[in-house]
Length: 227
Image (cartoon, rainbow, N blue to C red; front, side, top):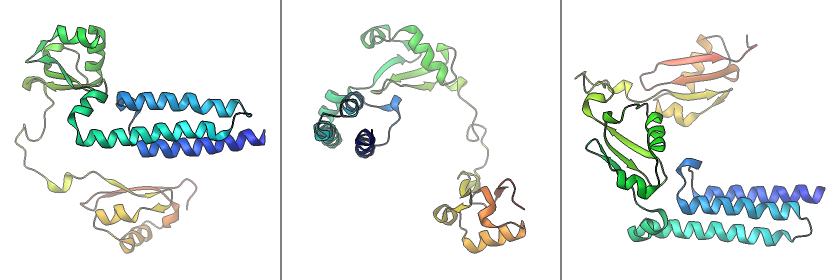
């Protein structure tokens, strides 16, 4: 039992390290080659865990080999458009100037239901609101709406820009831990934070969460039970 535990732990660490090397993508954003490697690694990893008599190295070697191949292919893809098209394919325009390209949908084996489902994920329920739509190499649909259907923005309404509102609030304290880098990005330091905490009669360690923007506006939530 203990042997199985340590074999599983070793495989876990190796796989996590391998996935980190491959990059940070969500499952729905994986390229075809990355998805294949992920599936193969999950299948290979189960063998040394379930079969204790199987040498651990026989499971580690193919996993590390797959990760190495994927890293090499990714590096080559960065410098070769032809290789990118071979391994990842190319984006396909399925709606152009408001017209659905039915031939392209058939080539992609993309049904009308698939198209409408992805449009609804972008809060679009009518095809006639779409100007262009492109199926990316990950299978995700990118949509460019017609002018009359686009969401109103300050630019559309010709409202003046407010630079101090462009940057979102950042979490500068989380469960008592201070993020100095985020604090500096907002133009503040520990002395400022200590002054704010003192004015609110609380210790920094008793702050559950605190957000701050570049204009100096902050929101603080004390830890439950803190005085």
